[in-house]
Image 1 (spheres, rainbow, N blue to C red):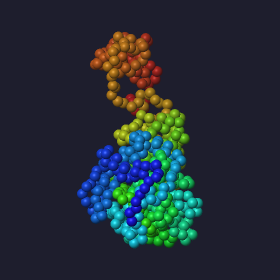
Image 2: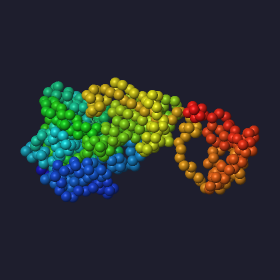
Image 3: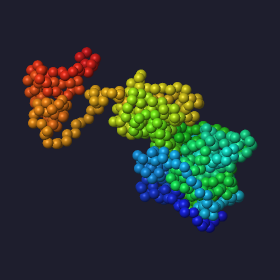
Image 4: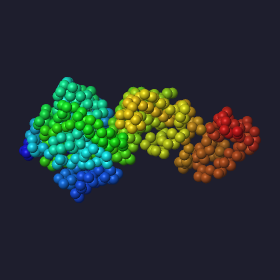
Amino acid sequence: MDKKVTRSTSIDLDKYRLRTFVKRLVDMGEMEVVNEAVPLTKMSEMIEGRKDKALLFKKAGPQGHEVAAKVMGSRKRLAAAIGVSEDKAFDELLRRTAQPGEVVEIPSNEAPVHEVVLTGDDIDLTRLPFHPQHEFDGSCYISAGIDYTIDPATGRSNVGSRRLSLRNKTETGTNITAPSDLKRIYTACVARGEKLPVTFTIASHPLDMFAATTRKPGEELQLISSLRGEPAAVVRSITNNIMVPADAEVILEGYFCQEGYVEPEGPYGEYMGYYGAIHMDPIFKCTAITMRKDAMFQTLLHGSAFDLDQSDANVMSCLRTEAEAMKILKAAIPEPLDVYLIETGGGSNTLRVKIKQRRPGDARFAISSLFGGIMRLKHVFVFDEDIDIRDQKQVEWAMGTRFQADTDMIILQGMMGMTMDPSLQGRRTGAKAGFDCTRPLGKDGQIPFTRCAAKVYSGAPAKFKSVEEALQAGPKYYSQVVEGLGSQDGREIAMGLDELRQKGKLGRDRDGRYHFVSDGKPGTTKIVGELYHDPNHGA
Ligand SMILES: Cc1cc2nc3c(=O)[nH]c(=O)nc-3n(C[C@H](O)[C@H](O)[C@H](O)COP(=O)(O)O)c2cc1C
C-alpha cells in the first residue's frame, strides 16, 4: 500500500537519509556508480575488488534494486559523514557522543519510511537484495541492519547492529551470540516465555550505524540524534511499539521468537577476517516491511581478510576505538598527542599511540590504562612525538631502534579477549602486549639518541667573519659553523677548523660540537668533558 505523505515537522527528513549521503559520495568522487544490471551473486566480488571506492549498484538482482555498498568503508567517507576533516573525526565523535540527544516523534503519515507499507501476505523478504557474500557463509545476507528494541524489564530503548540471513518469505536468521545488551534483553524474554519485538532499519546514514554500535547505559535511541548533532524524527512502528528513525530507507518490523536459540545460523565472514562458526540462534519473524517510495538498500564489506581497511564495520570500529583511547589517555598521562588504529590488524586490536613523555613511566601507564579500558585492544605500541604513527617506515624505524624486548615489552596474561579471535582457540582470556617504543627519557639532545637527516641550509647571510669568531660566540656543530659563515661549500670550513687545531685552539665535546679553547695542544683536538663510553669502540 502506498501512502500519501504530508509533513508538519521542521526536521529535515532527507538530510540524514542514506540516498543524500550517497549523492555526496558520488560528488566527492568516492563512489563508483554501476549502471548495468548485476546479479546478486556478483556483488560481493565487485565490492571487494574495487579497493578505493564505494559502489552504487543501480540495478542489483532481478528486482533491479538500488544498493549502496561500502559507504563507510574508508576514513575519508566516514569523516564526510561526520562532516569534519579526517584528523578531527575522533575528537568530534567524542564530543557528540557525550551530548544528550533529542528525538521527536512524528506521525506515520509524515514518515518517509512509511510511504510504502507491506503487511500480511504482501510480506516477501525474498524480493529484497539479500545477497551471497563470503564463500562459506550459511545463506545470503543483509548485513547493514540496525536493530531497535525496548527492554521489557526497564522500558529502555536499545540499538545495535545485527546481520540478517534469509530463511524464507517472512523469516531470517540473525546472530545474537556475542555478549551484548540485546543478548541480555532477549535471553531474559526467552526465560519469561516472551518474544521480543524488534524493528530493523536496513539502509541508514553512517551516523546511525555509529550510534547503533556505540554501547551506552540507559536510553540508546537518543544516541541517533547525539551522533547526528541535531534532533532526529522518529516514528512508531506499525506492527509493534518500537520507535525508529522516520527518515530511514527501509524497515523490517517483527520479533525475535520466544523459542530462543533454536536454529543454526552462520557461518559468516566476520570482522576479524575469519569465519564466525555456525551456532544456534533465534529466528526473526517479519510482520511488516515499510520503505520510502524510492528506497535505496545498503550492504557492507564485512569479513574480507586482506581488505579490512575498506570494511565498513572495521573503519567505524577503528574510529570509535581511537576516540575511546584518546579519552582514556587524556585522563592518564599529561601529553597524549595522537592515536591510530591499524585497520588491517583484524578487529581494531592494534593501536599506535604518540605521546610527549613528561614523566618516567608515561608510556607504560598509557599502555596499562588502555588495556584496562578497552577490551578489544590486544597490541599497543607507544611512540615519541617525533614519529608519525601513520607512517609505516617511521614506525618500523622506531620499533627497531627504541625497543628492547626484555625491558620495553609489557605482557598481561589472563586478560579478557574477543571471542572471535581464532588465536585464542576458544579460550575466553588471553594475552595483551604493550610495546614501549619511546626513547629513554631525559636524553634529548644527546647525539647517540638524535635522529639523522640531511641538514637543510637556510642560505641566510653570514653572521660571522671567521671560524674562530663563530666558535668564540659559543660551541657549534660543523653544520652550524657552515651556516653561520654563509658558506655554500663547507670544505673551507673544515680547513678553518684545522687551522684552529694546528694552533691548539680547537676542542670538541661528546656530542661533536666544536669549541674554541685556549689551552689545547697544537696539532690535536682537545676533548672537552668526557666522551660517551662506548664499549664497542676500540675493542
Ligand atoms: C556491520 C555490523 C554488523 C554487526 N553484526 C552483529 C551481529 O550479527 N551480531 C552481534 O552480536 N553483533 C554484531 N555487531 C556488533 C554489535 O552491533 C555491537 O556490539 C553493538 O554495540 C551491540 O549493541 P547492544 O549491546 O546495544 O545490543 C555488528 C556490528 C556491525 C558494525
